[in-house]
Length: 497
Image (tube, rainbow, N blue to C red; front, side, top):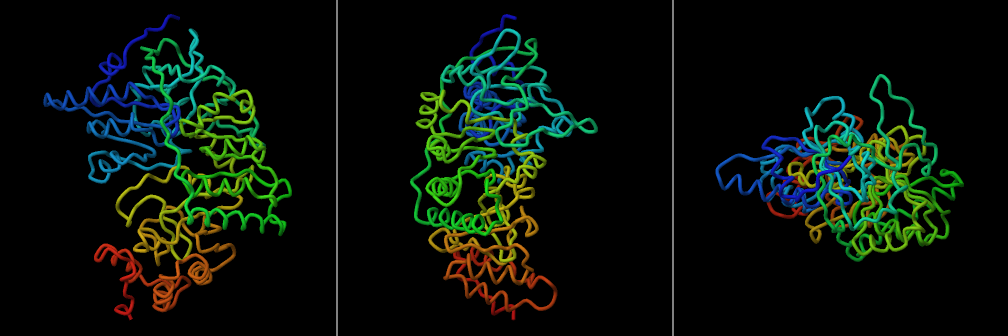
């Protein structure tokens, strides 16, 4: 079939106010880059003419400035899911210009197929190549595109000439059957392949192909700071102790790692460990550190949903793609984050928290309980099904004005029932087989910053009766003190006695 090539502006003109769009990609990799920029320009023109223009946007995870940034600045997003991390969109969400609902990443595609989110008008898919019969070599992120491509009425292809066709074979594209016909997912090791190397679409739905030549634009992470380095060292020391104690198999287990500087620090420390064996990863995102671990042989294989590499690292990958070709496999989010597979493989999950409370619950999403930061992402998918669930965060932020260990989290994303290990720059709290009071004492002792320990002990003294020694009227005193004075160290528990 002969496809129709067009400009990004021509594609954007076809999209109407109120349309629902599904995008390929997972974080910036694999995300469209030019049609959404043109769509933002169209929205601005429409608004200047006094006409409404907003679209509903479903993705795999976060996107990039070409999507969430440009469209948010143009106030062109009505509804958005399942995850985001662009400041312009965050502002729109927190002032209710955008209706954002925060979903577990493993659930988004299936819920779309279930009909929970209505009709999908367009899918926009980044591709390294497409054949006349509709076989697509995807880019550096997969996300939920198998579902979006199937359900969309019409499809745009962004043919990215910066992507080599040698990406063929690095994808494992699977579309699950829905209940009551769903079968088991036959992944028994992180490097098992179960699907197709290409995305197969109906070529008659492709209304246009738009060319671009752009890398993903992921910025490199800043150099690992002292706090992140200490957290990384604490995580690795804990894993070494578990391995030596025989609580981890001698073959070790696949690792999952979240995104950010702390996650990168943990991975770099793992790469230097002589006491842990080589390992595989079964995760949702691999970052710059993983490419180095693969090159060194410390990580032998990485199953992922996205190669979230900085542009310089992405160039290194493409320049040496023959070496990495059989060491990385990209899957859809509902496979990379699937609870069945995570539990079967015994994945060790390592994620970051905004704050944790003294009983082991974790807030991953809301600053001071109200303002959305990014979203829950895949942390819940992995946390609730991991062999070991590890959460980490700095003990304090903003120069000590905020304690990330609090009496009660202001927004609970992960309860104490799901969190096994809590790590800060101060130390490690192993919460397994501990009752609530034991957890509280351990977290204060091992994880809280010294400037907050006495305040937390003061809170503990208020508890009377019941299994969990919390005092509801004082539980948010840290947060109230910050809202009132700008410093949690001004918390005063004496007034509650």
